[in-house]
Length: 404
Image (cartoon, helix red, strand yellow):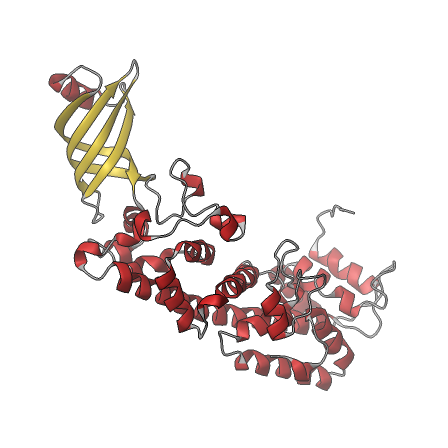
């Protein structure tokens, strides 16, 4: 059942733990750690491993110290950091592979440099081609919210625009809309033209511009051409390349940034959605880079889902030792069979031990293995081998010799 917790001063937190029998070797150090590390993560996250009986009240510790919590927490942080590093290396390799093979197939000349934002160079996935949280968000012409960010054309520029507008003007009682081509200077960016832009303004806010428009035509729907120099303009209709030029200086360094530059801006979830839309020749080439065959597509895409969940846990500083895949993430049957995974229920929910077996297929995890052994040996030295064994069991396997 859900519960509520009142705010508690650090001194009261320590008093509560001491009343439960926890030993403090240095109170000043304990106060510092409780201020820096979050009571929920530091204490609640590991207390079931240290309590005399975690299932019954009142809570009680026997021959356990605050240092036990610190060692568990510090190991968790080190493990999370190292896992995140391995995932980052894998993610970089994946993005590099996608960009290379897509460009080889579709962007081989400068004139074709930006084909990666054109939907015609992809296969729009069907609803039955994969999980709906991916295939339903690749491309929807009428709904930008269900369209991959690479393919959207609804981004906005806010700032100074000095240049020329050619297009249609629409008047209403209090607003005016310009829709067409905006070409010129978009602030300090390298954007030079927005071909399907829209600028709507209140007539009372842009009296000078409105007078210039009226000087050309007062008829709504007229096609006009006029110079514009406005400091606080909002132009809709930018593509993802324009959006990246606004946000990322390293992208703005290019007039027509290549895919291998822009793909760096995508999150792993964006990359997974993109994978479902890659044409077969490109996707098969990406799979080959990971020593996989075309019939490994579903297995690999499921692997990406699992790794994404692990990555997010690391990135959000959650306790990695408590990691489980989400209850609704179905684990590919071939993955389970080939890696001898042990889901908590049929094809659902695997713990960290099994997830690292999945990651090991694409990353060198010897550093992680060494860290786990170092933790084990350290706990043995402190006489806490039983705690270390319970900790490893919670992560999926109590036998340290079988890790990685």
